[in-house]
Length: 309
Image (cartoon, rainbow, N blue to C red):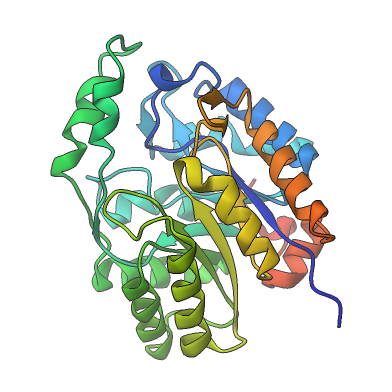
């Protein structure tokens, strides 16, 4: 039987990197829109989106700021739009799911456990910052706990259930897979679930191939054939883990949210650069890249027509 095509997700701009760190990181609405459309044209079937404050570039979970980008992206591409429910290490879960509740996307992310989520070592690499908020935001991340309790997860699941959103279950360690299985047993999520193995974030599981194999084996035990999976390798692990995951039958996520680079010490010029590179890796393995319509079928999505944009 032929293998299903590989789904490429592109995370356009996240809540970690700041404008100082790369001139190519989009944070103005018009730049996010252009890079999202270009990433879709390069082969990304799913666009994972955070919003930024249009004046300061600071990470934002204000639904109004998502409103500056979502309709324009949807008007120009058929790619699946996936809204973050992260975006802030300090906001409540009710605040974090606000954009998804407002716009009812086909997909949104959902973190499956609390972790020490830190990127403070980046503060030592930069001396000049574009905006006042940047340095303290990065340097003080060592004091943060990214809270995703069982109550938070349940609240998000129940609040968004009427929207028929398919979650990208972000799992930063093996225990998060067990958290998801428990939640499924409680009736919060239905199969097939879509797992995103997040590897290489300080506070989560390391970006080692051995750990990828461990995560995949645990998912097989817990979910059998009732799940689909993808890999997010942070930083310099991005392409290496993507290639291994594709060869193992998984899907891949790239984008400037997860790594600013296209090669060692070489900044990517755009999100589309990374999509093009990972597409070449996938096709070099004699695998096909999924179109948005194929990804919708594989992941059992409700379709663009049922969204609020």
